[in-house]
Length: 424
Image 1 (cartoon, rainbow, N blue to C red):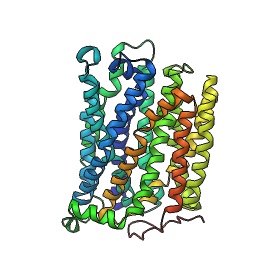
Image 2: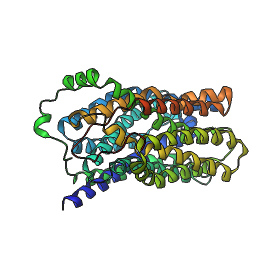
Image 3: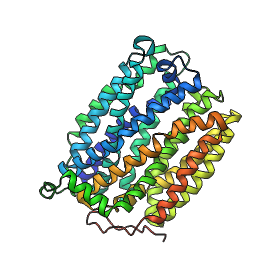
Image 4: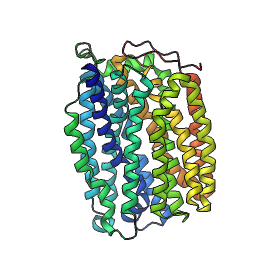
């Protein structure tokens, strides 16, 4: 009976994550269209920089959201944060779908878009890391596999987002069709919210002990005793964010703006990338559990770096098959690194401050590196061509390699099996 409850909790959590990431990914996949609607007086390249600039500015609020949702998870339970994040995401994404454009209200249009993006970013911050922690705490088998379901459901949501935006980008669609991916969030998120009300609380959450946690106490413990661990989370978070935003979503804008592919073809190739990650994540989690987490993650870094060079360089050929093959290689590298990622982060913090420790540091990595990365990649590409996107991803691959050698011996936790972090 307990096993059935654990599996049910994991499935319910995954459904909510799929809904949130479908909504969140639509912004970057529709970046060229949003640039035209919200910055019509700028040239195409400058408009994209502005859209990516709003994306980066919104990430400044991520650490605040990371701390708020992380603290709520440690103080009041994982279940509350997972439910609240879905509600906030629904409100923000539906708001984008209803926004008037520059032609209708002028400067207020991008300002309101920014406000919605800030809300979206805070909601995803509360969702992603807390969902991974919740699922590992529910696990009694392979904790690498349990943690990777957070990535798996996110990738499914992103793939559905890419597919939806590809459909609304077809030449036969009406001008207002760009609103569809945002407006369907009203249905998907409310459905996820209703389902998540049935979640059971994590067995690792101790309500009695949590009453003594204050924000000051949690922050003091993190900064006095876990600075080193926080840096590991930041570097891994940077890899996860930049490879998604630059290697997939920015890549779409890059090839469309340079007329290598049509929007529908670019989004189709991006869907293949996410689809391969979707298939590879559970497989690589099993491999990492048996072969050693650090060894598998380092192999993923090397493959990602190699594939990035090919992916951007060969895109100029305009060959769908070639770009699909390089995207498959890229997706395999990213999945290899990210499959055991959350188990590695899970072991860095004790259960009483685990949600805050991971969520806050993860949000800082997203704010410092991931958020500005599409804007930086766009600026570099305007000046140096395909090298711009490659530089951003190689930078975080190097950071990921540093994180692998900084990671300390894992904590022994009663609710998950020990895993060989070092190479075995």
